[in-house]
Length: 260
Length: 357
Image (cartoon, rainbow over all chains, first blue to last red):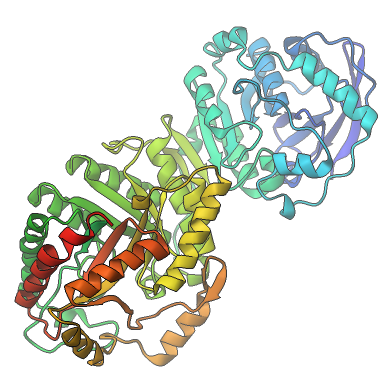
């Protein structure tokens, strides 16, 4: 069961949801804000999961303070520090994937591993975050929206506030500064794309693999952009395995004996 | 119209063999088997000479009728001995294969064949699932996922992991890649809504088989509608129709040969057949249809050369196929020599007249 907490950092009061015990796994959400899925529950069986609501998203006050993604990342690093997590694993979704990469670059000693769920740090030209009615959003986010419970109608004030914040922080589609620095990122990194992602083409995954020295790319079959919501078991299994074993996660431990 | 010869490596045992499934392996005659593969090359060289465009091989198990359980091996063998024909591998039975292995083997065969490979990806008939103990109820979904993974393994330039429902691989990085880039001409084989949708989404061809024009025509129409939804239209050669042919000098001779009752040669016990039929579900462009377990397949093309030419015209008009893949029935004889005569009849009196259809 996730419980809610608040932590102060850089003058913000940052809400977070926490569950589980074990090595810490910090999650930074996508442009739509914090939304817990079954994947969070599954991961909390093995890890202490802390899912932050980044300043300016959801119910938090409007954020006119943070200037760019790198600054948002350093605020989130301070929030994690103030929770006395020590070293931690870091997972970022879509927009939050870019925040996670900046954070890992800023705090290479503290971030043990990086997991990027359909990251939006490298985007095809002219792409934008999904917007519109809950139905339109669902069609962009999920390969099979009919299998997902309907999204709650979004508060228009929250939507407007978030849209402005995302537009300000998301940065260019190809961020030359970030991409140059990614070549130096030594942290083990896992990039996941759904094979039916309609927000960011899954082919973008190969750019991370080309740039980041210790990077693994995994396609989650039949999932759209919101992989953890759509295929939670498949997502959580590979994420947990990677966070636990890093590059050794490619060595199978799945037993195949049928009748001992 | 392009024409493909469906090569089954015909097995002729001088002794009678049991006519039930599975035929005991102890009844296999190694010399007859060797002769079957040897005859294959003789036939294919002749077919090439006659001007056929492709030969096709397919995966069938535990069957004296079609002696190719490992068609990648047939394809490589044929590639080394027959210089020009395209080699159509129609196809690997995807739900009971390791898709990464299939991608590797086909890339290798395409390279060995100097870019002459054509690929069809197949769900397979229900009886084949008894070979490797595949649950028939999972076959559809395993096929869809496997086909997707094969295409990804051929085209993704970076090593990747695959987190599927039925397949999981942490590292896929296939060497060699196909000689034909991004991959050989590829077809989803089947009449189902799922096959049509998959082929349309991936801009690959569709292969339909055996059923009459009005049935397979439903699928090819649905396929074209789906392609339009994905903003493209298939070229004629992106629709293949596999069918039986019974070619004779006169229509009367074909009528007579067709009337001879053709028992399914290796039937299963009724209880097994019925249980298999129940465990499987099939459709034509979304309309449910019964699976086929060892039933006799219809013969679409039959009659004299003139009649067959007309039937091929109708095939083009009604189902839009640009390639026909022909399984030649021997008119009234199992003698391989008779088959060669039939092939010659086709090559001289039909083939030149259907080229421009």
